[in-house]
Length: 552
Ligand code: F6P
Image (cartoon, rainbow, N blue to C red; front, side, top):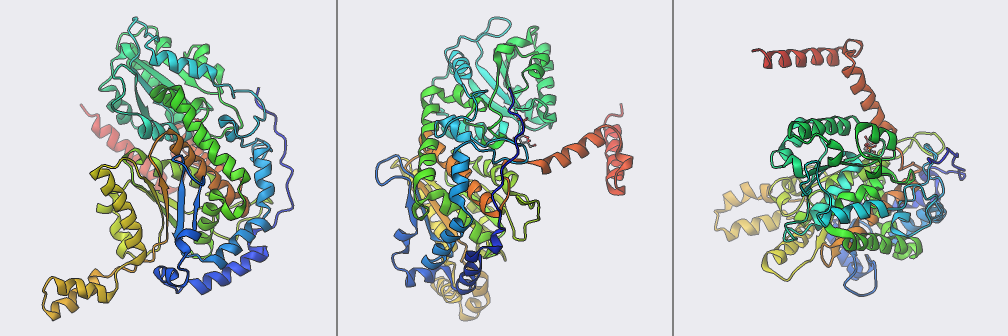
């Protein structure tokens, strides 16, 4: 049963810019702004150690974050920690872990940590994952058959946003290509663009395919349209009992059953788990199928280790607190409005997209707890891509463009093997080069070494300069496995909570997204004429293209 709306009991809320530490931070920013990043190492020789935090003191299950390439020093960090204290982040964290209804606009808790056993569940509805686990185990064992009796070997998850990005990232990161070829292959389809489903179906055998309709609401237009298309494809492939080829992860059990999913194959999730925090719940079904229960439990264990650290470590040694505070420092005090996520692992190539939803759908807001507008910038623009691929594309702008961009390097160290070592070396080299840059003198030296005449050296040197000073955080993991991926995702989940709490934002709703959905419905209803002249005209032009394309 869905929990009833119970209003959030607000704390007296002070917008962050009215807290005393905010003023001190402004002074630190003015002091540090003109300092080249690399010179901070001269005045603080021990900053590499002092500005690093680890999840644990020892052991191979660890995660280390080096913040020393950020434009911050001990004094500024101390004021940031003071800001967290003045904003009563401790109270926010206690309320989060106690299952308080911090999602105050929807009257819900945000207790996704309960799915990994790190706090009590506010209620039990949807929290038990034994049914999706059993279903995944049966699929892996080859016990689930299609309508013609053929074993299901191909699972296609149809979902979007939080019902796609987390499982897609985790399956890509953790599925071992060398796994038993008899295990089901897992694919993902999110876009309503027919090409995405068509591309996956091109290699599919209808008799051996099962679709998971993953939608907490079972009301998302893209997902429902793709589910209908999947059913039509099954029928055209001769699978008359399409119910044998569907499962669903949804809280709208009736709607899913009405669509044709057998009720025992509709797996709910708790209302207190938001879409972008839901990979730990039944939404993780594709991951359970791809990696099995033991690895999934390790994934939860990694996240739980981070939860426990977040809940218990003092702010002075707390990874998500630092990650959140330093992100806020960059946004609000150094006016850096963009965060590039640079994972150095092919298996993390979907991480930037996952983080985009997490940060931008959570804290991409301006209305504060007391209903007033934020007077300070909130979530940055998050983008990025996997290294080393991005080095040969967008890194040019980071080196020589006109913007300062905050950089998060994620570096799973992995095997002691030449290409893997080169991957790690590249990550560390990029973080260093983007911090240090290249001066005019260094550019001249490099041209002299090429033996160019002096006039050419002078002409070309400015073009080889790089301002450097791109602030970076480097997160080092021993390897990319289930435990460390779980820890990494939980680290960023808590980061956005830290920031949302201090800014005074509710990170757990997404009313903005609804506006675009409403407009799509207006256009689908043929009411474009009632819209602005540009939109009305574009709709007409699109109709023209459509008709021309379908002329016999
Ligand atoms: O459109 C945004 C959103 O509401 C996300 O927050 C959510 O993860 C996604 O749509 C999918 O929602 P559902 O699981 O209900 O289909």
